[in-house]
Image (cartoon, rainbow, N blue to C red; front, side):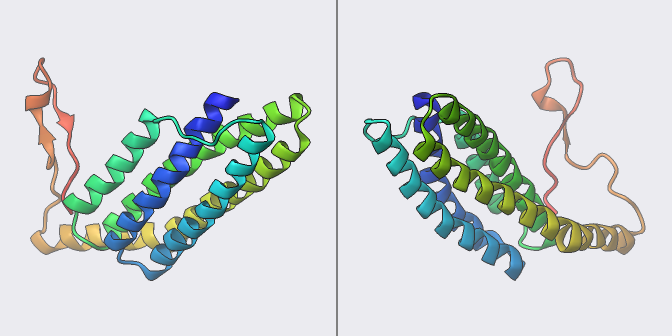
Length: 189
């Protein structure tokens, strides 16, 4: 449990830094507002984690998390590589949901372990955060399905109509594969 606590502590702090960068790349106001609200909420989640560390008699500290570093890096790369607009916004929601799912898995395990260990206060604090993470995932999913995925699809469809052809095979880079089989690269649309 302590390992997961240190992992998620690091993840939440990294998330606070990353969300500010991601919000600058977002075009959709609803998504930008959701990211910034979750950033503020994450500050409170860090405070709860501080309380759980205290309840465990441990110093609050993070431990680098390769999974979260990778997810944050992917989101930041998308902002740098893609044009601002619906396609980037849809991609950022997918990155955001990957982070939410990681956090949901971690918090879910810690809640179960805290209950098993008879740490009712810790379980309650962790459950509050788990509930928030699930709600954020639902919000992102709703925004993606109702607004951003249709807008991204329309933008992509409009680009296909402009030249009369679909861009089949765009983004294939065979140089990454030793056997010559292509590896999909991100399209810059």
